[in-house]
Length: 281
Image 1 (spheres, rainbow, N blue to C red):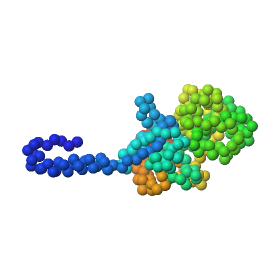
Image 2 (tube, rainbow, N blue to C red):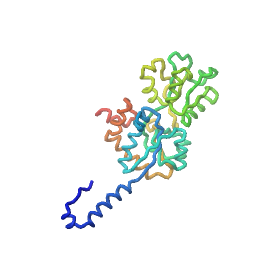
Image 3 (cartoon, rainbow, N blue to C red):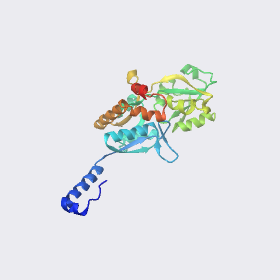
Image 4 (cartoon, rainbow, N blue to C red):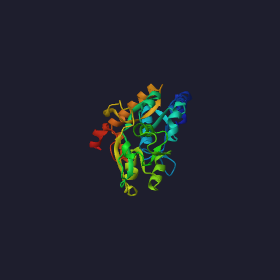
C-alpha cells in the first residue's frame, strides 16, 4: 500500500516520482504469470469441494504453495477426471494438479513432474468374500467391480485379469463407488489404497470391508521401485515450467512444508522423501 504524502512533500519530490511508483506497482501485478490448472475435486482426502464451494484437500493446497513459490497466479478448475488429460492436450489447461500414474501412453503425451504421492491401487472387498484375487480365482463368478472412467485402473485390470472376467461398472468418482458398494450393488472396487483406507476402511461404516490383493503399481513397470509415484502433469512443450515446478516441490519437501500440508489431510507418509520431516514434525 502507498501512503498518502503531505502536499508540501509532493511539491518537493514532484508528482512524477509518485507516478513512477504507481506505474511500477501496477506493472508488477499485471506481469504475474497466469496458469490455469485442472483438478478433479472429488478425490478425498487429496481433493474435494467443501460445503462452502471451496476446493480443498492435500493437492490443491500443495498446488497453491507451489504457485506462490514460482511466482504464478494460478486458477484451479474442477473437472471430471476422465476429461482432464484430453482438456490439457487441447490447450485448455497449463497443467493438471491431480495425481496421475505414469503409464507409457501418458508419458508419450505429457511431461510428468516430480512424484507428488505414492498411492498404489488395491482391491476393496467384503470381509466374508470367498474368492482369491487372481484371474483364476475370479473367473466365472460374475463379480461386479467398480472402476473410475478414464483412470489407469481400467487398462491394468484388462491386462492382468482380462476384459470379460468381471462385470465392469464405471463411475465418475470414488464417492459414487462407495455409495453403491455400501448398498450392495457391487462386489469389489479397484482403486487407490490411501483414499479407501481413510475414507472407508478406517471409518465405522467400513467395518465389514477390507483391502485385499496387495498393492498394484499402475505406472510404467520399467520405472525402478525407488522412483515410483504419481505426479502432476504438463503439456509436452512446458519444460521450463516443469523445471520450476520441480524445484518448488523439492524445496517444499526439504523444508517440510509438504509434510506439514500432508498431515492436515493424510495421517501417513505419502513419499519416502518425507522421512527426515516425519522425525522432526
